[in-house]
Length: 154
Image 1 (spheres, helix red, strand yellow):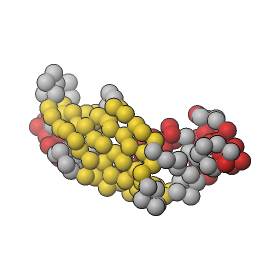
Image 2 (spheres, helix red, strand yellow):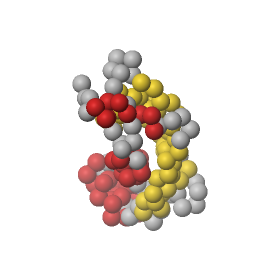
Image 3 (cartoon, one colour):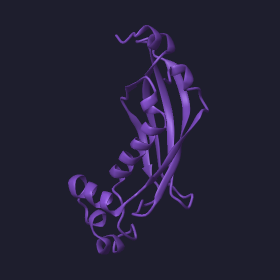
Image 4 (tube, helix red, strand yellow):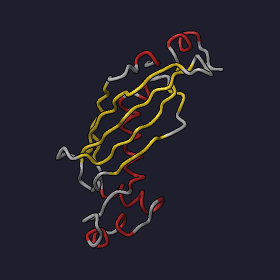
């Protein structure tokens, strides 16, 4: 299990590839972001996106899945309280294959809860052409090694 001390500044976690399907793009959009360019090829082609494209919120969800699979589910994660920013750099379209990295920017012990660590990460996604599609800076709370070994959560 990854604990605070494993999240050293500069450490890079590689995210596994994630294939984007038309069905997933349309299904997510129909439920959560029903703008025409997320639902229909013709509307997407007529928009500045240049074709049917995933909602930015769907991209954020795919990013989260990739983060979970790469390191989060093997950590002492206690959740998060913030995303500092997320930038959608270019449309994500059906047929794209996303890949990426999460880089640890900062890591420290909480002053209020010394059993807890605060980690700031920058996650970047690229498509199969190496073009950046999304960038996000986000916070992760995780247990210190001592707290994990002692079972401390209070």
